[in-house]
Image 1: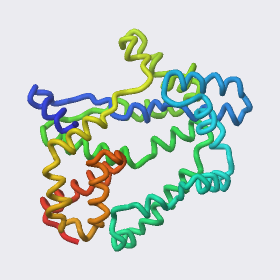
Image 2: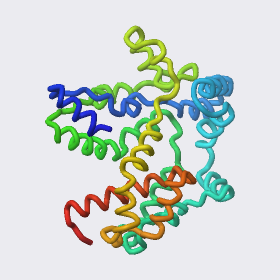
Image 3: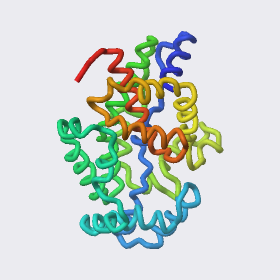
Length: 282
């Protein structure tokens, strides 16, 4: 999508392009304000905000209260036992991976999963703590690298006002009730845009879902590529990917039985094309 966006901008003679990339992370949804309300025993306020979230977004009032208000306050061991009781084993992702055992051992994949699981079993207890974690994710630098390369291919320089350090520091310093208020997330931004954005946009709950378009492109226009690199000529992937497991994931995804399998399919196809283009080997 960004490739097409920068290409269109270049054709129009645009050289500097403002991008609202990841304003959500800078402003913060503020839903972990529910945890603060629960920890402070402010149950009526917790109920009020949870009802608002259920009304303006997806989910139930009880789901918001439990998952975001009460559950983060439970001891890590209790959460771990509860997940195990429900069949959500920490290493399930590792067992289902399409990565070969050789590569998994070489990069110590199990330890990586354990680190991720440790962070998930110790959820933030305040909205500011959650906000800081989101701002500190490595995904930001990765995304900017990808977007920067796409823009450079067409001679466009992207500018990211939401990544302004001063804005990030200001939003991080705000109390939780400036981020979540009356069941609306990112309240400070909504208030700031009063009179500048149409009411329908300013007060909408969700956002567009790009998944159908992604799936349409991947399984439609790019289907010959997937068939080639996964079913017909996967040799370049063999040092890294368990081909039978990948083919099973591809079959589940293509048949519509598992939308979640898009990630290993897309990553494997991207890796195969990159390896072919660079002619690198294991």
